[in-house]
Each structure stands twice: as C-alpha cells, then as structure tokens.
Image (cartoon, rainbow, N blue to C red; front, side):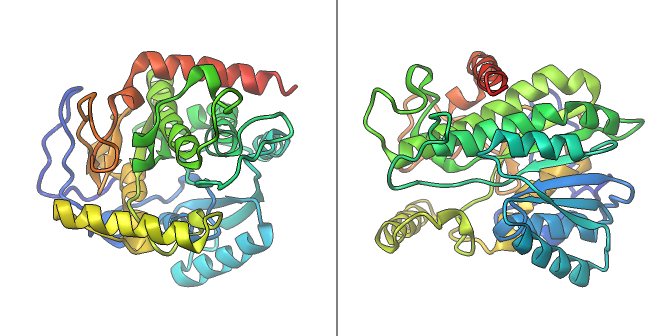
Length: 342
C-alpha cells in the first residue's frame, strides 16, 4: 500500500502539518498513481453513486478487493459492473448496509470474513428539512452519519486488527464536511428533544461526530496498527447527498459556496473525481503512515481554527472536533446507544 511520494516528503512528527504535494484540483487518478493495493481488502459505504463510487473505482484500479456497502443493492450492482468494466478488476462485490438500521449493520459485520485493510465511511444524509427519527427515537442524520458508522467501525475492529499485519497498517477514513463548523456535539440534546430542530445544526453535529470518531478510534487502536483520519471532500455538484433538499434550498447553498469562493479566492466546485481524491489519498498514501486523529481537506491537513471562528466564512477544522475529551465522551455515548439496541 505504498504511494509514490510527491516532492514534499518531510517526515511527520506528532505536531507536523502534513502537506502532500496535492491540492483541491487533484483527482483520484493523481493521488492513486503508483499505489499498489494488490491483496488489500476494502469497504466503501455509500459506494453506489457520487464520490463513493469514484472512491471505490480508484481503489479497484489500484488492485484492491472492494466491497460496496450500500442500502440499494440494485444500484450497488450497477455500480459494481461499471467499476469492473472501467478498471478490469473483477474483485468488486456488493453488500447490503442500511446505516440507520443497526440490525442491518450487525448482519453486515457478521457476514464479513477475514481481514480488512481499508474502511471508508463515506455514506451520509444531509439537511433533512423536517425532523425524522429512527424507530428508536434518534435524529436520523446523527443516527445514519454517526451511530451507524460507529457500530460498523467497532464491529469490524477485529477484522481491521487482522489487516494490520507486517509493514502495512489498517486505515479508517471518516468522511466529514465543512458543515461540522455549524455545530459541536450538543451532548445534552443530541436528538433535538428540547430545542427546535434545525436541519443544518443537525447535519453539522453529525459531521463533527465523524471527526471525533476518527480521533478516538486512532487513540484507542493505533497501538494495534489501525489508524483513523477524517476528511472533507469539498463542494460537489454531482452527488446524491443533497437529495433531501428542495431546489430553492439547494440553490441557496450553492450560492453561498460561490460567494465564499469569490471572497477567499479559493477553489470552487469539484468534480466527483476531485471530491473523492482526499479520501483516496488519506486511505492510501505512504506519507500518512502512522498518522491519525487528523482532519484533511483538499488533500492536505487542515488548519485548526481559533475558538471564535465564523462558520459561514471559515475554512479549516473546529477545535471542538479534535478535542480528545469530546471524542472520548462521544465514544462512550455511542457505545451505550449501540449496546441498548440489544
């Protein structure tokens, strides 16, 4: 699982910011060039469309065995055919996984056999206009984006530990979003029982949880050769993530992205191949050997923002999303939630 290193090859210490030589315009094909994943087994959730399918395509092109973990298996099978045809790799399979249903998550985990080398927690839902609850009374974005992935990740711990053999570690990539800047974890009211529901606060909280999952998983499991990092893919037009948003709301969101890009002079909308690049790089690059508990965007480690940042204009990672006490508290809460489902 060794990538061809770009020129910037400073060896990383615990406090060194990671600059990879890639950037916002890099694609999956740029970052996967020179990577050999032969013999490596991978899972990508939400891999039937959007950046999920492009992430899976890049891993398959590098020689990995790829499991597309999807809710809609018919769509997953179509994606698998597409990936096999475009890469020539026939080791692309489909498994059913509904992250909002912990019974489905448990069934997926039980069905997995053997080691696992890469787990890409890519699937998600965004900005549900009205509050939706699972049958256990959990707010659906938190339940899907975080709790389901937490149950999947912890359920596959032994497989990941088995995959961390010899000179290769096992890696977890947790997809977050700049949306995490909108809200920390509101531990006293995660499911909006006591406060008015806000779709963006709910989404932001779930995306903060995605970062904190990587922080705590790395702290707990890195001695076993398992690393975990979080990534922000960027703003991407061609994705199903916004499927629950009305056209008017979606246009307002895209307008905000355009305005932010104009103010900052930064990169605007990405293609799916550009959006998936950070996930693929963090999953495969030799530059990240032993590195975990961090947040990446545009293929590089993001700056930590000051506590008084402005969510609408800031770019980087909120300090509360990397806070080890928050990470440990969320892990304990998630363990209780999963344990109470029987």
